[in-house]
Image (cartoon, rainbow, N blue to C red; front, side):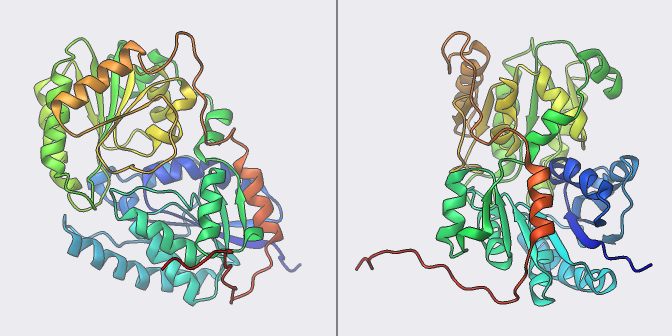
Length: 392
């Protein structure tokens, strides 16, 4: 019998992106009309960042291709070379797999390599979470570039749908499906505080902070200096424990790792440093946290659904749509301390007020699968022009 299932390649290069894609991967895997092809690259394959591909396998997924692209480097030159290695690796992978469609989420440099390769090979790309703005990182330009390399778009808010259309994508190919991570909140059971403590082999008591800080790649915000300011601010809250997760593989990230490891070693009962929590433990940690602190996109997109405040430090996420529980702070000790005080006292909201998350309700997987099954791909696409007057 001839197999007429549609081959759906899905790319993941980081722990965060994989967590957002988890339920979509499960639903593709269980759909009789689809065949999942999983491509894993970037931080997943690095021992430095926790060999997180092992978690993917433990979750019941077969990895069809492992594409090694990370250099032992912490510079922009290393990142640029990794993109080149990615193009070579993805070319071989796609030539072997021959997918009918490729799904890419977000704005990482690894994803850019996959998207540009697929476009040249005439593999239609479905891009998730396009149209967003993060002015402090080169992810911003990468995200918009992936938009132009993609054929269908699933965005997380109507504002972002309008921006993708503004980039010249035809409205019928752009759908507001909400944020992918909210599906995990609805469908995955989370751990109790005791279960989380046991899983981490760390005696967690409330209150505690969950902290993730990434390098800011397009702003005058030195990673080491800003992270030291964050640690100095945390010192003022000796009655709060701290879970510190590692930064990502952007240039400058590796310089943060020794700082957080030293901080944890000097405060063994108060601070836990861990390369990767995984999606279930991460969201469970969010659920029980007094605040989420740092500059990760999850602090803006997923955390407000837990009614937990976020202290968003610096310029990395500047421009994103955010709930009122997201408290912006300059990357200085004083400013971070003021923001933490605002978070833990609840001064950012009215008493008993429920925070509304602007990123949807968590019905993304079904909508993406509908896009996969109904796609009618044309290698060339027309630029959609808005009606406007030329400004001189």
